[in-house]
Image 1 (cartoon, rainbow, N blue to C red):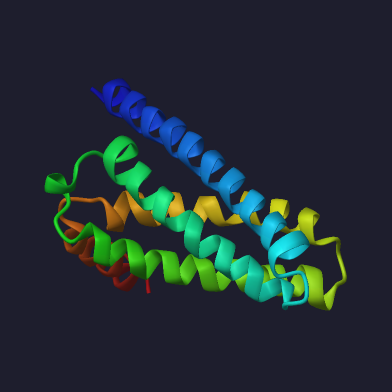
Image 2: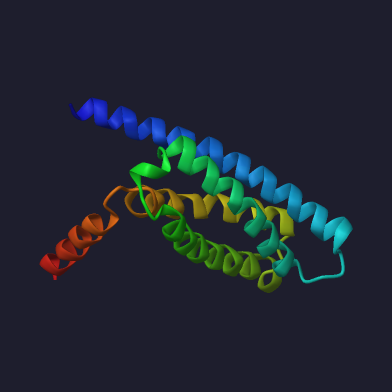
Length: 150
């Protein structure tokens, strides 16, 4: 029984990586186009945030339909996705600013590095919150276990 559940989770993780990798390519191409051609005189962090915003549309649709199942299994997932995406985008933009603006690391290297870190956070959040049929049950269990350990 444990193996079947683990195999399903590994399948979800693989699908998540495929969708995430494709999202990264979309984001990187958009950032490159924005920052090198269309809006080269604008702030790179703003352009990065804009590329993230556009790529999130693809990410939500792909994860909802393919990675975590259909909409009917997780009513309200679009609203929860926006919450997680806003948190991840703020973290992502902050890390991008830190790497590129504060530490002066080449922007495309920072973009790649940030996109290795953020997916860990988003997979966990999407699995237990965004696309879960009963996300509030999971949160109550997490809070309860945290209170019990104090």
